[in-house]
Length: 195
Image (tube, rainbow, N blue to C red; front, side):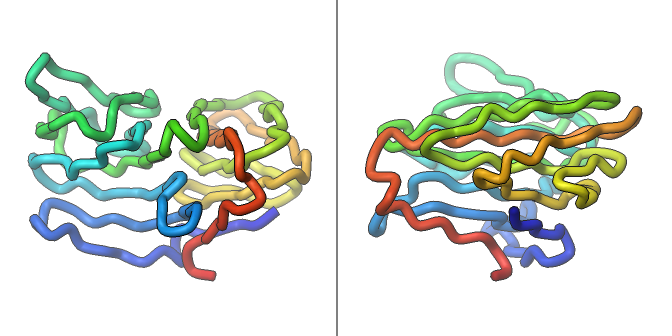
């Protein structure tokens, strides 16, 4: 199991000046992105980047909610409520309650599946082992533990096949991110940030 601390992430300002992204991990197959996990600070309203060919799961991890306006209506992303949508959707983000931070999982549905779940304490979160893929946990609140290591807000644990079961006390919360490969898993290369 590997732990990536929030303090080790690198800030990458957006070209439009509307926020900052911090890459957590990516997986590639040759030059093709299989999936990507990142955190973003959203400081103001603005258009989302085009991620055609990818599915996006956005979870607001701190701050208020945001309306994602598109040609057919509005999607609302609220605190700790994963929202799944097509990465090609032309979206304009309108902050409802000021700046926020979100966690993004983006994945290529031709190469893998992706799901994000919220766990809140007190509980023992029993992860579903993947025969071919990856499971990660991202701290939201309190100090949940996994494999005897604390996971405060913003830190990420890559569980691999360790079988570690997260333990959450009252007030603890975390995201579970599951990736399942649809084939060619031996050729997929994982890169964890700040390594």
